[in-house]
Length: 320
Image 1 (cartoon, rainbow, N blue to C red):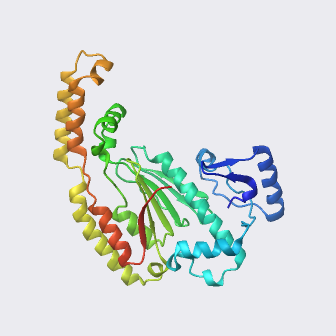
Image 2 (tube, rainbow, N blue to C red):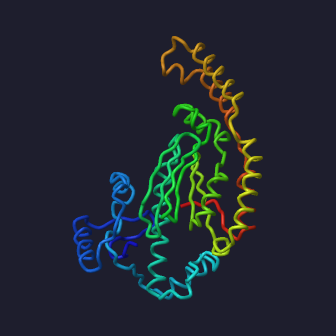
Image 3 (cartoon, rainbow, N blue to C red):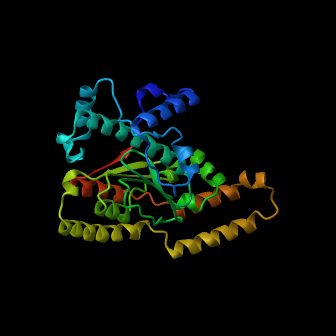
């Protein structure tokens, strides 16, 4: 996606060359290879913030040692996660795919870092070139947005303890009781069902605690008949219904939370903000609130791992 001539890669990250030179070379590539077509409805501020140096031309990607990179990619990726027509692709097409696949990972990671602390769900869609072609914003617990042309989705999962806590409360827990911030919230049943039905190439999700997860459909799953997919959807709905009973924040807990908050407010009435944050009342309130909200249930992740294996997909926690 980004030709090595335009950047220097090191252990810290990627530093781009002079912008004017980059833009001049981009224009040269556009004149020679033609310009890519982007969705005009996509907010420009989003793409400029996340992908300011996106490729604007149709120039194919290149690598210095194509044969080595192709063999390494095949070994690392695994046969079931290569394009279905991989054996028919030319060397140039394979190189183009490899570079763009790495670019997709970089863009997805940048998006996850941007949205992990949001208290509402944010959903981004990418195409096979790594271009952002869709964005939707939801509420604390869901985001409903569909882009039928996308092959990669990236979104966040707000965790209740973050949704219902203020910044000073989270800061106190991080310093004094990090055990309350160990919850993992990977994919929901709707995430997986939509990805499977739509044959998404990859789906990324990040939760409020910074955990990042990747679910990839293999070519075996993509080729399964519709009847098999219906059975998969039925199974997912049933299992997740049981899992959600343990993870949902019930009305009873919300009532308790409201009572706890009102009691705290009346107790600190008249104190200055700095006095409140240093008081035992504040510390007790934060801990009791955390006990109501936290639910370090790892059964969801364990189930998705087993489910992925059963349908020849791949699910894992990632660190990018």
